[in-house]
Structures are given as C-alpha cells and as structure tokens.
Amino acid sequence: MTTETETIRTTVPAGTGEAPIPRNATETPAQGAAPRAVLAMDHVSYSYTKGGKKVVDDLSHDFHAGRVISIVGPSGAGKTTVLSLLSGLTTPTGGRILYNGGDLAKADRYRFRSHDIGVIFQSFNLLPALTVEENITLSMEASGKTFDRPKHDLVVELLAKVRLPAEYANERILHLSGGEQQRVAIARALGYDPDVILADEPTGNLDMATQDDIMAIFRTLAHEEGRCVIIVTHSPAVADQSDEVFQLKPLRR
Image 1 (cartoon, one colour):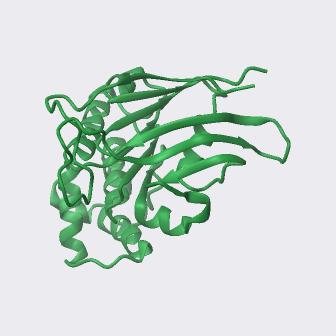
Image 2 (cartoon, helix red, strand yellow):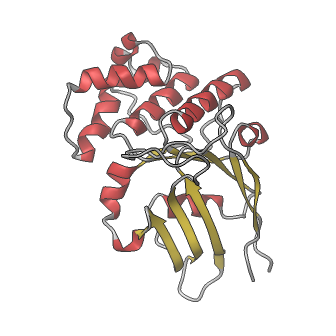
C-alpha cells in the first residue's frame, strides 16, 4: 500500500537560466548547480495510532531554496498531514523530515518553528484587536531573536515587501480587507527572517486579481530572496504560477 505522488513540473525561475543563489550562502554556486534542498521528506509515513491506518505512506520529496512549490491533491490525499509534518508540528511514524540535512525529530522543533519556518494560515490567525505593527512585532518577539534595528523600521520594510504602505502599520486588523489581512499574515511570517515559508491555502478566500498579487509576492520571496516557499492549495491557478507541483494521490485501499 503506497501513496502515489508525482512532480508535475520543475522549472528554474523565469528569466534566470540558472539555479537561484541559496540564502546565507558565502559563495555563488557554479553555473547550473542544483539549488539547495532546505526541507526533505525521506520515505515519510504517518498514522494516527500505532499500527493504525496510514494517512501518508512512503513519501519522498526535496523542497529547494529559491523555488515556489505547490502541494496539490484531492481531499483525503494527506495535504493537511504533510503540512503538519513539514512545519514540525507532527513527527512521522516512519521515515524522516530533514531540515538542511538534519533529522527534524532530533532537533529543537520549537526553535525550528520560531526561527526557521514561517507559517501562513488560511484563516490568517491575526489578532483583530491589535494593529498591523503589533501583530508583526508579536511574532518577532516570540521568536527570541535579536534585531539590529528598531522593530518599527523592520515592520515598515516588511510591509513594503507585501505591497502595503507604511501607514498601514497603525491600522487595526478589523479595518482591513481579506487581501490586506493576507499580506499582513505574510509580513508576520517574514518577521524573523525564516528560510522556509509554508502557506496553507493562502489564496482560498481571495479574488483572482488579489490571488495573482499574492503569488507575485511569493515568487519574489523565492526567486529574489532565495527562500523556499511551499504552498498547499486546491487552486489550479496557484499551481500554474508555481515553479514545481508536488501532487499527492489517495492511498490505495
């Protein structure tokens, strides 16, 4: 019994002709060098109970720096489980999740979630009573990282990355549209400068024009900043705008 998967498309970012430069690299990779695998699933299986029915079985896939990867599949294919495994919230019952080559099960997973991976939720999970700046700085403070500049200056830079003007820092979340809230959620996930961005249906509640804007932000984060952007989605349009599509198929029973 296996989970069928396939990679539908693999491309380098448009207009480059070469692999993106890894984040925090001290040297530029040689022309045509393979991008760095930041996260990897190594024969991963998961079941909710010991010896119970497997939700995913024997999944392997590399997720590279500088790329936007969409994970797609019908209901019951295990997308939510894969998201939980990649974010370190769940430990595989078989196989390994690797972060920069190390087994995540043997690492400090709290540190991983608060330093190395930024998660964007379908429902945004912003605190409505707080301002935009307060929502972003809250995640920065929770990370425990130190910053070499005032947090307000960093927030303004993050808002520019998600195409919001600086004055939005003082807006209350309740006053923002769905698309604006999603941009704030992306800025919050970037607050502690993670290598990996993991987004759960980030365009599910947005109109097509806003969806395209959000995907343009994700492509910039991958292609220009060298982050690994992983998107769980049902949207063919989102998959079409990704560099790579990892398709899950339901287990054969």
